Length: 124
Image (tube, rainbow, N blue to C red):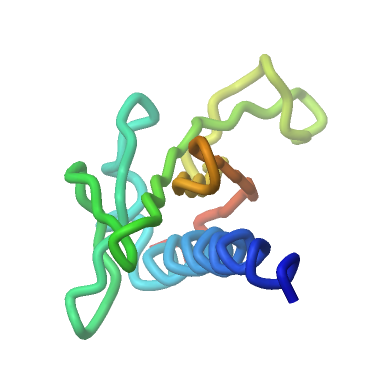
C-alpha cells in the first residue's frame, strides 16, 4: 500500500503527459495553419482548457496545483528518401511534439517526457 501511494504522482504524471500529446493532436485536427504552424520551435508552450477546447499559452499552467506540463515543438527535416533525419530539407507539415511534466516528489523535482510526431494530416 505504501508503494502504491508513493507511485500515485507518477501515474498521474503519465496521464498528464499523454493528455498533452492528445491535446496537440486535437489542435492539429482543428486546423494546422491556425494552431500548429504559428508555434515556434524556440518557445515553450503550456496548454489551457478554456471549457470548450484546448489552446496554447506561454504562461505556465499548473495542474491540480502541483504538475507543470510544458509542450515543445521541434522542426522536422527529411532526407532524399523522405525519411525523418537530422539533415535534409525542412518539412513544414511535420512537427516533433514533446510533452514534459515536472512535479515535486519526496525530496526533489521529478520530470517525465514523451515525444511523438504529428503531420498536417488534413492539409488544413
